[in-house]
Length: 184
Image 1 (cartoon, rainbow, N blue to C red):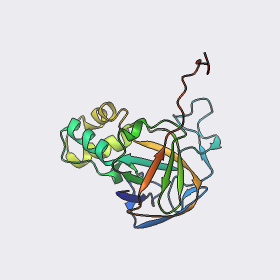
Image 2 (image 1 turned 90 degrees about the horizontal axis):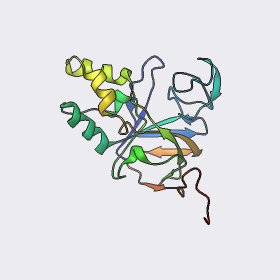
Image 3 (image 1 turned 135 degrees about the horizontal axis):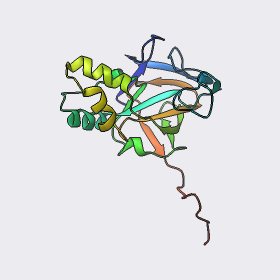
Image 4 (image 1 turned 120 degrees about the horizontal axis):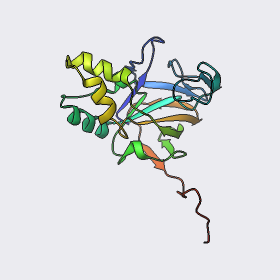
């Protein structure tokens, strides 16, 4: 693990680097996304906006390599994980954003996270990147270039304390295409 972050301001998606975080079944203690439930939004159009639902977005995970790839595509020097509301910045897991749902991430200190889904890029962080680099059009370009590179969201399966610098192992579940029958 390269970085560990908390969203301390409930009115901002920008996160702040930490050396360690207490992890509970609700997420990262003190983080704006912590909670067993959340309010439905544009990602859950099946419910009226604001309906209380189970949270599957407790932790936001980014890849250092994928951030570098997005920065290169945008022709900017760097994109900081804090600008995208990251809780974790990982390195060394090839194509992190494409890890399938139900992948378990085992951290060396005992915490386990389970991937819910990939995190879709949006204009909020794109707008911040546009503001930082004072270049019109970067927000929309970010949404396009960060597709399938924007990281993952996950939930806590095993709580504990997570410390910066821990190692992580990914356990990918068996992949079966819907409609396939085993033994056919």
